[in-house]
Image (tube, rainbow, N blue to C red; front, side, top):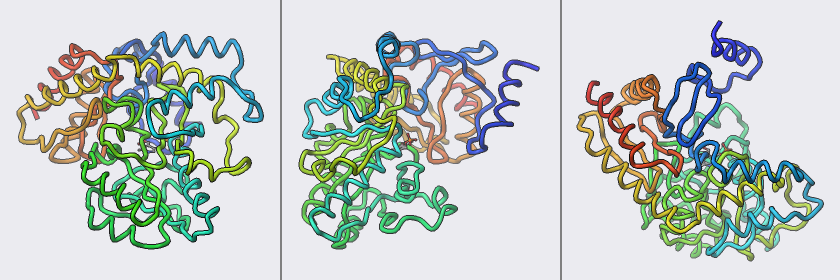
Amino acid sequence: MSAFEKIKERDQKFFMNTYSPADIAFVSGEGCYLTDSEGKRYLDFLAGIAVNALGYNHPVFTDALTEQAHKVAVISNYFYSEPRGLMAEELMRGTHLNKAFFGNSGAEANECAIKLARKYFYVRGEKRYKIVSALHSFHGRTLATVTATGQGQYNKPFSPLPAGIGEYVPFNDIAALEKALSDPEVAAFLVEPIQGESGVVPATKEYLKAARELTEKYGELLIFDEVQSGAGRTGTFWAFEGYGVKPDIVTAAKGIGAGIPVSACMATDEVASAYKPGDHGTTFGANLLSCAVGYAVCKKIREPGFMDAVREKGEYLKAALATIKSPYIKDIRGVGLFVGMEMESEEIANKIYKAMLDAGFVLNVAGHKVMRFVPPLIITKEQIDTMITELKKVVESL
Ligand SMILES: Cc1ncc(COP(=O)(O)O)c(C=O)c1O
């Protein structure tokens, strides 16, 4: 039995069957490369789904983690800690946001945002509780966030779903949004600036600007889910900065920890003030390990030139993808290193995914037929070239 077969056998016996993994077990990584249990190396364009912003074994990550591990990892939120404040300050630096809450996953950040929006109107004595979200959105797997997720296959089996969540509007449709937001019971519009899981679909500038104007017009809150688009992935620290729109609440996870589980729900002072001690909490949220690592990672991403390079490499990647000539390619789109290449069908996309994996390149398929490229932000142009050379071969031989 190979090392992989042993890993797989145990996993299938003891791990709940909620995923369908490829027949690979990664055991280590270095830079933008991963190594599997049989010693094969892969160039990684998935980064744990837009998580590993600094790749693998990066000294900023490992030093912060080990230094903090030698001190103390968890103290509970009954006490103050320096990493918690440092991380919060770093995340919101230069923005209009003032207060952060830390959780452990993107879903928890959105759960926190939904509760905050409801509490905001509760303390004002206004009967506003509905959360409007977009079709084809993805916001997480807790009951509230999977209900906000505008893809029925994820939430239908878990009915009855929480009331007041799950009114969906077509993405990038301003007229439909106005109709939904004119309901006086709406508390907030929750939206991804760039829909990730449904295939890297950026919102238009006009749409997000209209979302801001309409939520203001009707007295509602605007929540941006930046779980996938945040932490420099689009070439600005937050995608909302690139769009020039200021939401009341922003949620984040994935890249802000570059591999350590940490998420954030951030809000303006005015909105955040609705929460009082006892309203929200989580044991592992704001643990010192996550905050110390997240702080170091975010500081690194904010270093001069880092995000300029993300923008430049993103354009380079899109231009390189455009050199692949194939009738099966329907669209190439994205912002920064958050890029999608839409294929003609799910079958074609899956073929490419498998062939690339065999050749030692990790990407994935989002939204059924979109090849998603969300590499570590430290990917080089040479590594992009290496991947494109293989992808060209694969796509042109379909
Ligand atoms: C935009 C968005 N929001 C929320 C989530 C849920 O995050 P998590 O899986 O960390 O709970 C995801 C995960 O892919 C996401 O892409």
